[in-house]
Image (tube, rainbow, N blue to C red; front, side, top):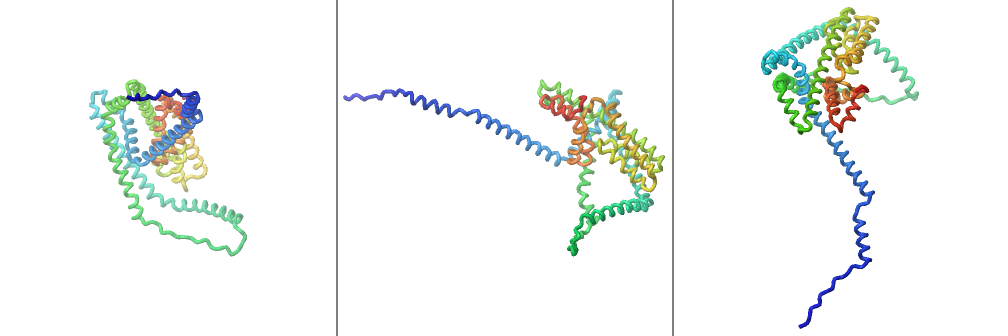
Length: 388
């Protein structure tokens, strides 16, 4: 019988071991490859953040009507909360107190709207009496502007003769029916949203305690105390902000009405209320507050009267922004002017006129949240002023 030969195991040579070590070393990434990989990961993270921010802005814009209605109802709920709390202290059930507060709010809003609507109609009917003076004033301004245009055109125009005429396209103005039909959809949506406000305010007041505790329980147990303090501080900030605005607005409206009455401006109480509360809008309010009295004072007040209007409106605005706000709101709303201006620009672009009203509470709440989150404290410090 022939014996089968088994192959002997081969012993690797030193050359083979060296080649295997080189292959293993080549498989490990170098420091440059690691840096490139980290840079690509960071770039991907930044791209995801940018896409998320753009998507959030688009969602906020698309949900404009819903968010504005909800936030406006929330502000009204904060306004009515002291009344509901006072009724609860005398053993009135919270649901009944919320119903009383909402009924009073609707009645007061309807009365004020009716009063100012009638005043606006009366002012519009009386406006043709001053149309001649208004037209003469604008005619003088138009003549001066035409002189400036002609002098500028004579300097810039080319001396060559025979210049080809510029074609002019005349477009027909849209009819009233087209304008009404185009805006009827938006007006209907706004009216539908307004009908939801009383119900939202009522349920926000009735379920306040449940909503507060449920919001805190959304966070992990180790973060609930911080969440409770954050929500409480935001509530105190909004209440102080609303109370200070109402108080300063009433004071400004009374002073403006008295000054306009002394100057003989028609419907001084109506224009004084508009000017006093419009002056509360940071930075832009000074221009909005000047328009009503200056427009109504054309042909009524002289140059000294115009100067008095400017001094009154500008002085009230400066006092409100630089003296009353720091004293009344205090440290609850410490924001730097740049942050407030940027927030006004952003929210006005997103939500229009209501964005100007909601911009300051939104940026104030954002600052409070940033102050309680470690990773966002740098942003909170940027939003705050030097003393915060």
